[in-house]
Amino acid sequence: MALDATSRARALAQFMREVTLDCSGITKTDLAAAVAATDDWIDANQASFNTALPATFRTTAGLPLKTLLFCYVAMRRAGKLRAQEDG
Image 1 (tube, rainbow, N blue to C red):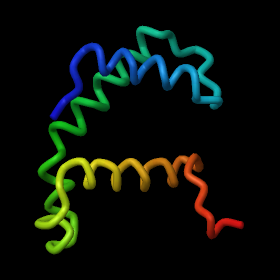
Image 2 (image 1 turned 180 degrees about the vertical axis):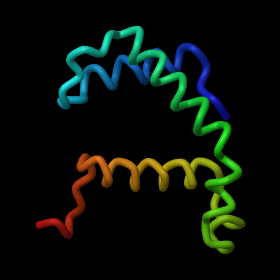
Image 3 (image 1 turned 90 degrees about the vertical axis):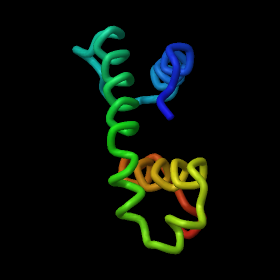
Image 4 (image 1 turned 60 degrees about the vertical axis):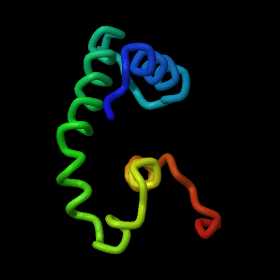
């Protein structure tokens, strides 16, 4: 389910507060459009992601758990999720 305008704005605000990567040359308007495009992409590709999941997880897990899994993997790929096993 796509985010409403308020949730997108709050995601944008939190992103701007927390992200320490170089965003020079990117305006707030550009970033807001990127948040909207990402949210739209997730909504449009939800079925594809669901199909890619192993059958047991796909049929057992609810949308919040699937979304959280996606986020954990994406954050790890971005180098923003540290695990206890990392030492």
